[in-house]
Amino acid sequence: MTAASPDRRRFLTAGAAVLGAAASAQLWLPGTARAAGTPLPDGVFTLGVSSGDPLPDGIVLWTRLAPDPLNGGGMPDEVFPVEWELAEDERFHRSVCRGTAQARPEFGHSVHVDVRGLRPDRPYWYRFRAGGQLSPAGRTRTAPHPHQRGGSLRVALASCQNWQHGYFTPYADMLAQDPDVVLFVGDYIYESAPSSTAVRRHEGKGEPYTLEQYRNRYAQYRTDPDLAAMHANAPWVVTFDDHEVDNDWAGEIPQDPDKQSHDAFVARLTAAFQAYYEHMPVRAFAIPTGPHIQMYRRLEFGRLARLNVLDTRQFRSDQATTQEGAESPSMTMLGAEQKQWLLDGLHDSPARWNLIASQIMMAETDLLPGDGKLWYYDAWDGYQAERNALLEEFAGIRNPVVLSGDRHLTMISDLREDFADPDSDVVGAEFVGTSISTNGDQDQDAFHAQWDPLKADNPHWKVIDAHRGYHLFDIRCDGVDAAVRVVDTVVRPQATASTLARLRVETDEPGVQVV
Image 1: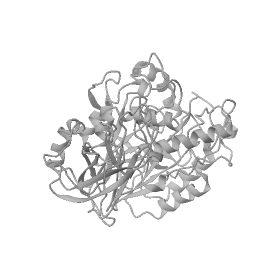
Image 2: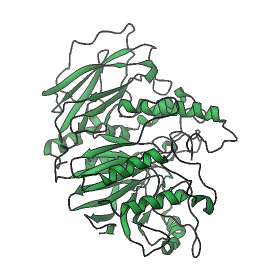
Image 3: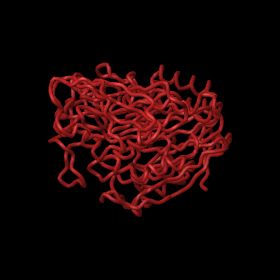
């Protein structure tokens, strides 16, 4: 994607204000929508707007009608028409297309509009209208033409936003950095029960299990103003990790099978996936079928970058509990079908950069100083045979870069063909992004006292840190320039941001270098 124009930049300065009012000097008065049988309550657009999964000719537009968002939504139990409009300018003088979608109670009155026929690599503005009420305006962007070479792409990598641990202040800085796309790799919500000592208390009385409870939890997160502003200003590509359902779940196995029966957990999966779809700007392929949802998919950004978005939860074996178990060839993270899909997409890629969105860390984390190994079994370390086979394939892939989350810390590494051999070839780079808010304002001295002694056993690590924030990537043909953006606090609604580290991945030179 090309650099932002002055008009795009000026739009950002009004981003927060746009969320509270229509971004148009004109009153939008289309006459195509019929009135529903029941009048709409006031304030139906409390959850804002967002867009996602950009294509060269299309984008998904999202909103959800929810006048009482923390109490089931507050909508009457019937279908309501929602008009949408997309324009080439923020004042909607140059309208491109418009239509009417149906907000249905069985989908929580969410709306997913898959707009096609758009021009590649350009910004668009959009908004919704229902029952005489106008939504905030959003800005989005299509992907480059499939055959476009060159150009640039700015990607923000985010994950792990725990409402109770702090405010989502990194998004205020992300908004100012104006990414072309936000990649969110998991833990959009946390399923934990409300805590009286939290910075911000979770809604409800316990963990969510039912559809309404998950809807309420997502709705609470969607009310964070910094998160809402970022959703309204760039398209998102999302995938889930564990906390959208239950900590450390695998397939249809909960973390505590002695407390959750199989049938009960399947019902929980069904509710969690339904609520996830209802609150994310994803296409209709992601409409859940009971306890199953299609999430792994591929997005193209011209010939510059191919993005492979993984699902590392639904198809994995239950986590190992021993080193021997972690090394078993029977352990799978991806399942046979997804693994083959990934390998096919990597080997057949026409792109300069092959990006892999993996919710959990791929590089080794040896937690045992000195001789021997101690691994974190929920990550790829617990699935050694499959991980090692994948890294061997990376040796024949052009410029593989893995973008991960989950760890609540920044951990940037070379990917080696065999982590058991520190002298084995470097075959790629991995950026594990820190959390947006999870773990709150961490004691940095205590963190480094714990982790720095492990560096000798993990020579592939290039940067480790425990500030809250996100990673920002400027991807061009000759290289990827990465910045670790951090904030000084998440326990207050405002924060000061800075760049903790700058790194670079050179084209056709595997590995990452600190600048």
